[in-house]
Length: 337
Image (tube, rainbow, N blue to C red):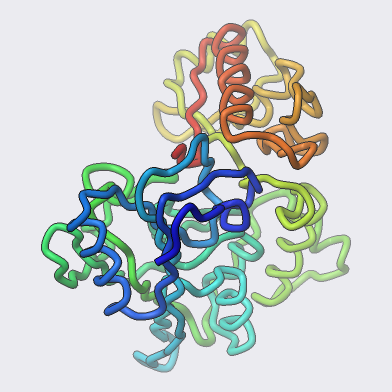
């Protein structure tokens, strides 16, 4: 247990914030020990994975626990299906690469997403037509109320768009220890619906892609559009794509004929990046924070010296300007601490 510990290396925005206490745990026993310490001293808890989906806006007056639980195992169900179990501390992209090496299909569209396995169900992370819920079997959690192990299946997780029980009524109650994914071994479902993937495969000269080809295409797309957190501080997409009623979308289309939208029944998902760009934020910088020049959905620590509050205030200005122009209120995808 370390005191007055800098969390700057543990968040991908690279903002400076201190934790009153810090502990890195590699076993369930160490985790329970740290939690009991917090309970005995009436201290709040902050669990850190890859640090890719948090914005630290102030010092944390409690215990920050870095989850370093590691291990990957697999169990074949039948000729075509395999269960892959990954501990919470495993790097997400490394897990995807591990599965592709074994020719396990299902995770390829989620290549190069930053962060660790443990946070993937919380956000129901998704990209290019795939979400965690599509390949999720179950996850094992530690209940902070009684320190008992529990298992959540697909239904119990109540996955939604960038949402789950772990962000709603289960927020702050459970720590995800490991996740089990159901993947394919041979009859892979290749997802190429997204135009960007189709264009990339065409550029690669590939007509009948493998899961490995899909992964390469996704990696190339992400690298060309999104900044590397190791080079410039960011947390990937900062905002969720808003969903609005069809009637509201049709009314907006009368005023903004180029507005983009993806209908789903009586609802339409509108790309947040398009809305932000139309408000003139793409590449705009205020102080140390900026909207990325290639992808306005990404807020960056432009100088490396931004505070968490500076980035938060910058995001508030974006939210206000989008609401003023389009009547749509953007929701932050990043967890604000």
